[in-house]
Image (cartoon, rainbow, N blue to C red):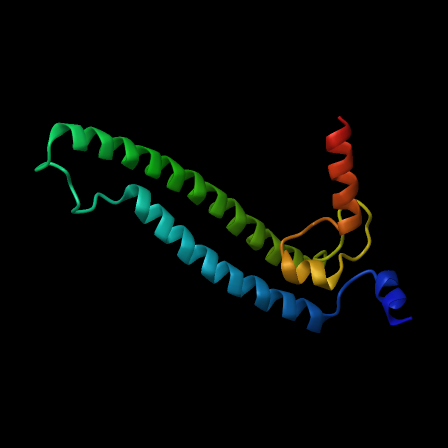
Length: 136
């Protein structure tokens, strides 16, 4: 019976929103630290240069460095999108729309929000979206 009451509510309580804010802030702190490491990895010119090795090894290593820098750059861009999504979730907490599915208008389950705190779709809507993408 309690579960049904949760589904009928339009918004999460102030206490519930504060719980989600704390989860998001922890994830943001870690995500920003990870982004810093990734950014340093693809912008850093470390002291492990290959100037004193044979040209063949240098070409191979430079190729690996380019690939690694591209991969780190790609990962950094993905991490930045994650940070933006978390920051947007904080805005939704502030304006009272956090946890409301943008498709169905129903509350997104707490379990989903704890796992994916920046979610804007309920499992129901996400499943429907995936089915539509597969069929199209």
